[in-house]
Picture 1 (cartoon, rainbow, N blue to C red):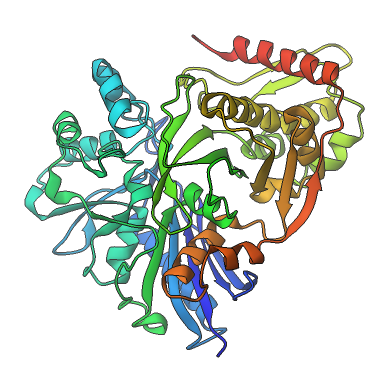
Picture 2 (cartoon, rainbow, N blue to C red):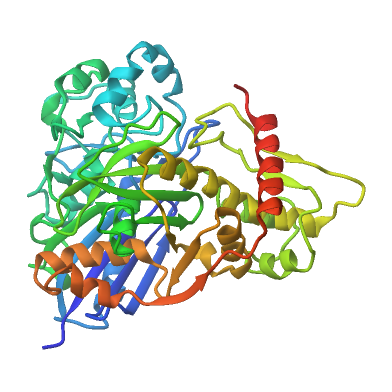
Length: 485
């Protein structure tokens, strides 16, 4: 009997809902953007109810194509973004505070003496990126809250609550591991962390495996009675969607930012060079450890060239412009528009263009912008390989920017590793579908999932060692100029 799996990918700028068949191919897809709210410089918010509406709209659009053929739902989400709502009314008490939001940086600074303890328990640096200080801010700054009626969730938890009509308040291990409240070693909400961030335990969700039952859908008639049977944060879902089930397997998602994650299995590595230790998903759908490097500005640098400088008409033009010159002519762009993420974690760093001469032109700038994604990614991948002592043979890639052949070849050259680009580059929603499908036996096992993954193109390195070292040296010099510490 023909059946399908539905996946909701709730991202930072929009919601994508995708219907997959058993071969892992896309049958239908729908997308809706939603409003980005910037109340003050450095503050970023979303309206949780608007997010919910985009979910309903995209689910209805996609499910109408194959009525009564959807076996289960998988859910993946922007991580760390924080929602607090009243459990009696199911209404948010404040807008969602987005992972990008820097409003709680001063709270982190005031707690700096506890940063070693935080990292030892959570694998995370003490930073405004994560959920704990966002919860703290809402509880302290929104008046007239009845704490006993409140619930907290990252976006997955909020959507599960809405989908199940308030019957399920739950998250999975991967999302819990991004809150800065969850002990990733003992697998529990940590009382010392709850005390430090002044978060009452009763507002926190239950934590389940990523491949588990999260209740039945009640609020969208077209899916009424369908199980939510797979949940993971977006980067962990992409890792699973890339079939990186075993230690040493690694992927990079090239989107607005670049997010590199490496499965390290049962062995956690607490990085000394700016990487995050987090929870991912193994071949059984259970939690395993991973190393992650978050690069804040990836594809967004090309959007900047288009929207702010007018150097390209559309992002896809960047490839042809880049290959029209022989090299970068010594020009480097360090796109630290919102500071530098891994491995530097310098929030005060700002973007620079280095190496300009009278002969520099717009083509060199476009090429340098593309190259910046590869350089930043190489910095993280090389540290992962060094700290884990696991040899990396190849890097699996996904995300919109991987359609750029110049970028992929340059990434291979500068890393001196093979790059594998799949036919289906939407690994995030595919990973959510795979988790849901495994749980409901749509797919029998991960061996069957591996068969659905078809490589479109392999990029192998051709660059000479001396040139690679020269380019990396120029990049590192430019980064030092951008940093404040």
